[in-house]
Image (cartoon, rainbow, N blue to C red; front, side, top):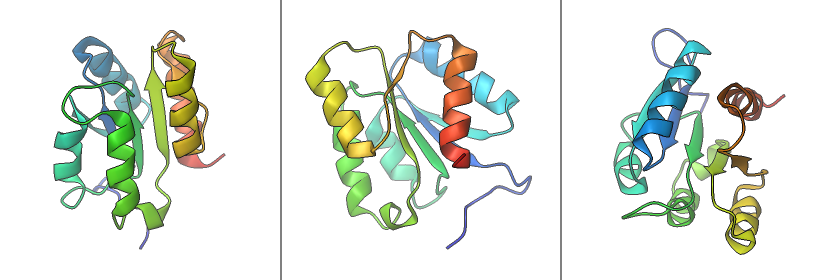
Length: 132
C-alpha cells in the first residue's frame, strides 16, 4: 500500500496533543509546510480515525488523558498501519528520563522537545516524515 495522500498530494499527519495552544500552533506551522494535519486532543480520538483517514506520520505527546502516547503506540503496533512503517514521532515537554527512554525505544526515534523553537520542531518532523 502506498503513502496515503489527499487530493492535493499532501502528506497527512496526525498531531495528537492535549495542550490546545501548542497543538494549534504546530498544526498551523505544519500546514504552512505543506502537510494536511488532523489534530486530536487524545490518543483515543486518533485511533478512531486511523481507518477513515490513514496518516503518513504520527506526531504524539507522551502524557495525555484517556489514551497516553505510550498506550497509543501499543495500539498502533497491533494495527495494520504498523506494517506500513508510518513514522511515529514523540513530542513532549516532560523531563522524566524513564518515560523519554521508553518513548524513544518504542518509536525508534529521538524525542522532539516542545521547548525547541517551533520552526525547529517543524523541520525535525518534516525530516522524519520525508525519510531524509
